Image (spheres, one colour):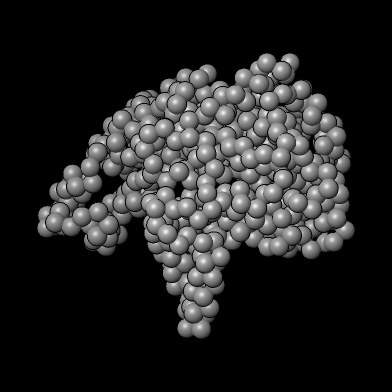
Length: 490
């Protein structure tokens, strides 16, 4: 692997970015415009009906964000002309053929000009509707691949997946490709076309029955979870992302392909400034509940490793991988995380939360400081449910029921007075696969990429992505938690 100057590689290049309003996409776009103003063009695909709507989304949901303040300070009144020259919003939808780009002239311009395609479009809801998740995470990946093959100057397709396509595997998880049709639990019959047909038939049947939108949504959510569990994945999100990887590997032909698998993405570590984040992301759902004093107990293994990685490190890895594998007809997989090099235990994260909010309490709507205490962490489902039964005076006979059935009964017994337990059960069910995760993500390929960047680029420090440099206590207490409070909980 040889790397020249990473910054120079980006000069005069045109890049197509899907999912342009997403968290990572914003960080990527901001970084490229900041470090390489001589980039030729950023084509940003946004889900929109027309160019006017796409332009509005670009300015409201991307460029208007606090993330771009450094760029605004740098360019001042010239920023708008710089943006109009370098950035082209594209109305489209990756769940459609040709990415939903209906303007033929624009489509042909992209095919003629683009050097790199970066696929960041995804729905990340664990329990997303199956038709939606399949359309974006699975079939969308195929549509991006087919579109990329028509780009005559293309040097690389970089697809961002998730490390958790591994399911709930234990031990060292290698940077290995997923084989088409291979289920995690050994079940036979996994076929993307079959899944697509199943969804279409299900929707047709619901429409014939004149089902309400609420019924359709619930049915599709249940179908997604059912199909995921059938083949060994814990939720619809990672199942559909896994099938997307399978399609890319099977049909890429000679296209240079890099699949990046980040772990749990957190706020920016340094660039363009520390602590920027957008939306409630995984662990922040727990944080948002805990700071308000509503999380007194939780189901989790305290010794479990929580694999977190700041968003700017993921983007830096993406950029370096682009340069390293341009024009190489191969499939490379990079797992970007911290569990091997700098593990973070759940019990430590819990301590960071307590320390921060003990010293900086949340002020509620009545203007009173909310006192927090260390939550009780239960390492088994049975003991956790027993605690809930006693604390909330639920009949102890519920302890006879196990796992899923018990969850349903506990949830069903909650009334408005006990919304706290209902919210808690939802959090537990959603995140349980990751609160007992026993896997460690190998990053041998990623480590080689880091080394290559350090040895061959004079500006390698611009593209840091080594998790060993992170002091987790300092990061969470002084960067991440304040960032979530400022940019998400406001």
